Amino acid sequence: MRFPSLRLAVGMTVMVLGSFIFAELSGRLGAQETLSRMDRAFTDAMRDSIATPVVQTFATLTHLGDTAALVGLCVAVAVALIALGRRWLALGWVAAVAGNSVLNVSLKQIFARVRPLGLDGLALADGFSFPSGHSSGSVVAYGMLAYLAVRLLPFRWHLSALILASTLALTVGSSRLFLRVHFASDVIAGFATGAAWLAFCVTTIELVRWFQQQRRG
Image 1 (cartoon, rainbow, N blue to C red):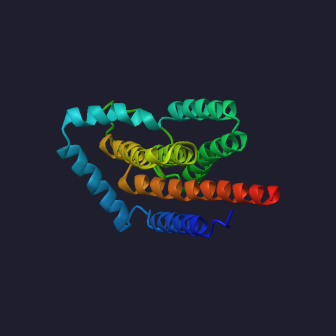
Image 2: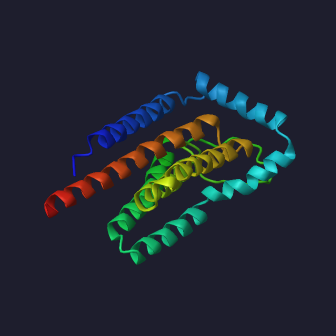
Image 3: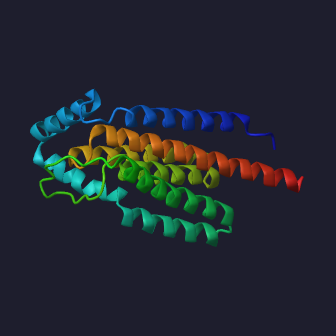
């Protein structure tokens, strides 16, 4: 098996780009910064322009990124992978999902950004706001599911898996804006950190896979 240089280059590019976007956003979080004013203006516009039925729909869809949902998904997929004899993939899957949770909590504590007000009772959200845990968690969990689909399913399912994963992550991230429990920059930062961590995990798994195959000759 040839060294996965293209996959390594793509993974590194996503990691660098995601880290750069996050660094740019985190450096502009001050209350008087243009970014913060734009965030507040966007949140106010969402409150005034989005119909209640739309908000209620996203109040349901947002649960796809809840901690309980992702933990349940993590356990179910890990058990399935172990049953299929894919223990290394199970380990990589758990490390990706759990590691992102630790990373997100750590970043929230570092930046300690207060959430926007006006939840309308449709969603419960506590803790700090930046970056969005639902956004990053959905990118990593559903992105890893797409990666597993590419690894384990026939080729005809690959594109559908990638589209579905992207749609789910985008939907969950958007729901946090519709529910006004996050600012736009929180969601973008969540997407950025999630993509960077996902790229790191997938790249690491692929490199380990390559080294193992090299050792087997």
